[in-house]
Structures are given as structure tokens and as C-alpha cells.
Amino acid sequence: MTTSPLNKLIGYGALLLTGAGMGIGGTYILKHPEIINQTAVAQAQNNPSTAPIPSIAVPTNYVTQVVKQVGPAVVQINSSRTVSAKQPEMFNDPFFRRFFGSQMPATPDKEVQRGTGSGFIISTDGKILTNAHVIDGADEVSVILKDGRTFKGRVLGTDPLTDVAVVKIEAENLPIAKLGNSDGLEVGEWAIAIGNPLGLDNTVTTGIISATGRSGAQIGVADKRVDFIQTDAAINPGNSGGPLLNARGEVVGINTAIIRNAQGLGFAIPITKAQVIADQLITNGKVDHPYLGVQMVQLTPEIKDQLQASQEYAVSKNEGVLIVRVMPNSPAANGGLKPGDVITRIDGETVIQPSSVQDIVEKTPIGKNLSLQLDRQGRTLNLEIPVGILEK
Image (cartoon, rainbow, N blue to C red; front, side, top):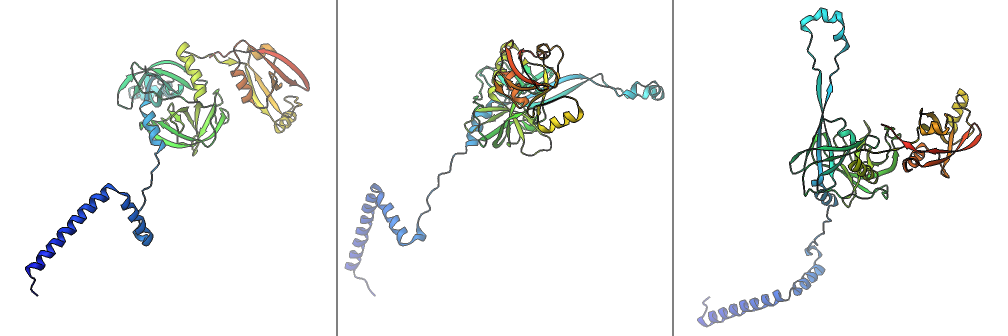
């Protein structure tokens, strides 16, 4: 088929008009993008399989934000202490020494013990909170920051009773961890632990607050005057002294204790308590703890039956705090307390657990009298006991 020149001219003109129309239409659509949306909606309604997949907003990972915020303030603390090496007893046996003579193995008189823990910076000029047991008896302390800088640490003070210590490094403009309020913690809140378990710096674990108010006796550290926070965030050797954080990145505790061979059981010192101790360590280098001077157990009907069977104490009460020992020359001894007494009230407050008595004593100013109501073999007594200072 032969196309005439006239037909070709008409065809080229149509293409030019079509191209111009698309150009004009495209310009109009770019200026009015709602047309595209309306068209897409119409197509989706007519054919759902061609509908565009809507984008999903990914929530910000709060743990990542907390780690970025607090991580630079978490440090590694290395300590070393020189101790006397104990020689095996058989090496001192004359027969043994005569038999082996010059072949006796040489044993050093001293040995250096090294340990690693964690801590976190609480002031821009280099004050660091950690555990007392991390630096206990240390001759030298070094602090490694996240950015790799290493400083010599100076111990401002330690308090073994609460396992809190403060270390100082000579530096300025340091990142700090914001301290929160542990008094209002609720079970189920998110918890984040940062530390250096097994020397692996800035390790992060997460969990929840599992419980609050765990006494030292409950977790196997009866010598500590702390009501611990329990968490299931993993806390391993080397985490000691590191921060336990809430979802806002505030320090709510100092990670301190694990129970061997247990899963999901870690403990931390409430930061509200630790801060009070730290302030005294920074100011005075030590902490004066109120002291009564008694050893106590919770009295239960079962314990009462055992005491009656053994005829150790004549106890008439079924509940209260039983005094099992009074320390010589203590405020309790000087005030007239005796083994077998059952404390029922302190300053008008009913008590049935030793931890309650300890809490009241701890909050009482040194030198102030405590009003104790107690049962002694069926008789009610009221005594005034002045609170003393625990001598370390």
C-alpha cells in the first residue's frame, strides 16, 4: 500500500499534537499531584491487586536511644591488689624440707590479684559510682572510658555495708549518666543494664524490674544494709558497678549481685540509697551507720514451737521480731535488751520482720532514742534505746 505525501503530513501533525498534549498534561499533573492519588485510588478500587503497599512507620528503639545517651558515661574499672602468698603447710614441715632439700619449689612471698568491674560517671569532673567490692583493698585503680582513654583512679571512699564506692579521675567535660528516682519503681517496668561482663566493654542487656525491696538476707548477703532491686536483665561477673537504667535512660540502680547457677536473677542497689551514701563518701570519705547491736529473726508459730521444745527461750508471742543475740557494749545491751525479747513496736509502728527494724534504725539520726515495745516472757516492756554508730 502506498502512502501519499498528504497522508504522511497529516500523520506527523497528529504525532506532534499528541506529544504536545502529553507535555502539557504532564506539566499540569506535576502541578496538581492529587490527580495521581485520585487515579491510584480509583485503580485500587477497580483492581485491589494493583493497590500500592502503604509504608509502615517503624517505632524508634528506646534501648538504642538509651545506650547512645548513657553508654559514653559507662566505664571499665580495673583494680590490682598485692597480697601475701600463703605457703602450703607441708613446705614448713622439717621432714619434708630435709627430704627434698634444694629441690623445694620456690614460692613468692607476694602475689598480685587483679579484678575488673564497671562504673558510671556522675559528674563532668570525673566522679564515678561503682561497687565497693570492685575496688576492695586495691593498691591501684585504673579507669577506661568508652572512647579508649585510660585514667588513674583515686578512691574517695568505700562503704562495704551498702557495697557503694566513689572513684575520682582527673578529667573535665566528661559525659555523665543522669540519676533517676528508684523510690517509685514498679514491678514490670523496663530495665536496661550496661557494663563490662567478663571484660567485654559496654555490653547491653535488657529485661524488667522483677521485684523491689529484696533484703540482703533474702538474696544471701545478710551483711548488706540494702533493700535490693531485682531484675531479670542479665548481670554477669564484671557487670558489678554498672548502671541499671529505666526506659528514659535514667539510672535507677547500681548492678551488684548475682545468685550463682540461677537464671534471670540479678540485683541492684537502689540509686536513691546509693546517692545518699555517695554524697557522704565524697564529703567525709566514710559513712556513719546507725547501730543498735542485735541479731534478729522473724518470729513465727513454727519457730515459737521449736523454742518451746528446746526450752531455749520462753516466748509467748506468735509474731514479732525475736532477738537472738545482743552484742556486748552495744546500745542495745546498754539499754537493757536481752536475747529472747520479742520486739513488737518501734516508735509506735508495728514490726514483724527484721528488715523493718533495720530500716527504722537506718533512718534514725545517730544519738536519737528509739522507743521500743517488746514482750519478755509474757510481760510488756517499753524501753528507750539511743542509736549508736556502727564501728567498722
